[in-house]
Image (cartoon, rainbow, N blue to C red; front, side, top):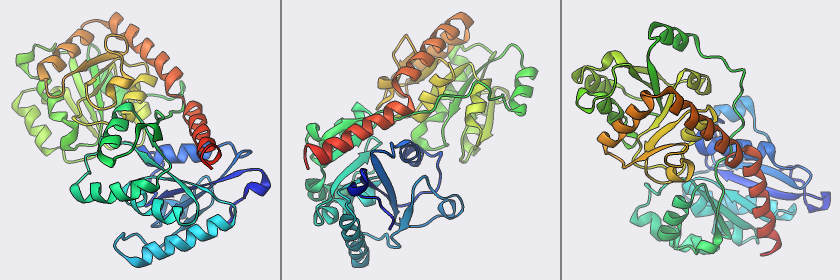
Length: 379
């Protein structure tokens, strides 16, 4: 373990996550950018992963990392290995750990407390994974948590209720995003699609295909009974089984206006082809897709759930509709599809808000202040 200590003038920060496989994924992406941007004159980061991954072996990480080699919470060897690691970290001046994902957030707080290390846990969703067993475990381990960082007020409220944590220990830090590159070019396949449909307005939905994302609502909105204009097309960007959605599009006779792009590594470039950003989810802690839409200068239509209303100002940067209310969804899509000037005005405002509220530097500096508060005021 190569951890600089306070003797070198920096505060060691141990980041813990069960695995790290994708620097572009939601939680993993935010962790990657946080560690990458952390002020090295004040903090010395180190990563502990329970299990190794091809990505880490081939690409590395923005700081040194170590593999615990154990991951089963029910195994005494996992607890012992973590305890030994914590002892070494403490001996090198470590006194603060920031923990991500569910399993590490259960085991780490009590083990680290035994070595005098303060633990911050992160929560980034609306708690769909809570079960009676999880709540029981968290009611115990939460006693050893020094602070919690959530990515929205909505997640903060859910976390406080389900994990029996005082709100004064919970800090809201919105996800950070790097400014979109103005030089990114539209992918060739989408350039050709737009050329084939010069009068079309394209609404795009970037989300993996899962029931919780309610992508079927967007396709239903295109159906004839909602009176959406024929020039409105839908682009669906994301991995998953499209079989049922394609059947639905055929049944509603809108299959020529629904385009499935599959999983893409060039999502930000794909946004160049869009006129409207769309999200229909029934649960969102804080949607990365929404902020990426805003950065791209797109007006947004999204379900009024979770952290969505904290990102989208209804009538200013987009429109919020009751989740599952397809008629309302269709009405807002029709409003935007019918007026280019309105799309431009709302999209410009969305881009301005994204730059002001959801910048990467803001996210990193807020974390740094919390770190100092935990080890300083409480330490």
